[in-house]
Length: 344
Image (cartoon, rainbow, N blue to C red; front, side, top):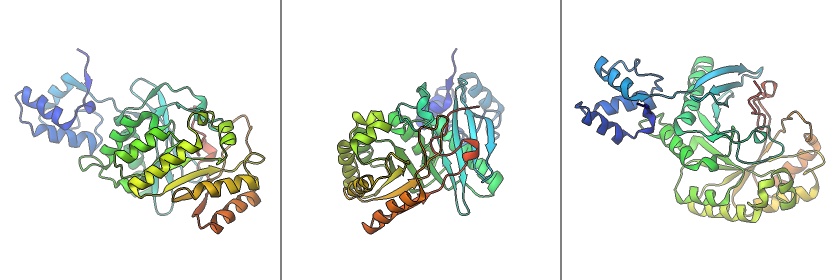
């Protein structure tokens, strides 16, 4: 008999299972707590269950838990995990510490569905979507590392690792449900940010589904022709369509969008690029994070000068658009934005 991963079952499914096995249904609540609050790796550790009950679970189910295959620590305190899945595929996730918070950067796909030319992950073919429990396990692993190495719990989550989250919509939302639910980690959705490269239909679906987390968009150019060069899929998902979807998002949620923006030398560092970004930002309430570029092996792109980055920030501030320059973390272990590529 092929055993089913027990974490694919809902609480009601588990209650039905125990009832059919002649056991009391409240056992399901105990098991669910072990799975989603305590992050149990096996049935043996479920110590408030009888040996008979644990053997029953062992007979019918498995827990396809991830394992941290390799952990690397950066000189700045960032930790990168190479996470082995039950089928031996690998994804990467990152713990990013600051003085006041610990952020988990998690993956949603093995590889990526999209084709951004500046991103190492996009050069890996998409092998499959991650299951909700595999996303949850990344968060739990980083939470435990934060307690161990920084003596504080995980405070924030960003879906900015490997993959396009909106191309794995259902599993990502189910994972967030477990992360934020009272039967799971109980984390506030206000501490979660989902980052997308821009899939208009799915952005609208997020709004229709009344999600409570924050939304970020990897923009990098507000000129359609230029954005298509670095993000070829943008030919299908145009800036006009994306901006329409973002307006729809704001009208439904009343939450502003964060635009993530890298400035490259000789590509999008002109005054025309700056004006285009300012105009795009005026379409919907937003803030801008200017992100430091993290080089990948071929060196086709180069970080813009501080002078040009200042030109961006000054123009945005004059237009009363909040802007922050984000410095990279974990460059020395290829853990920074755009560098996750399973090199090990």
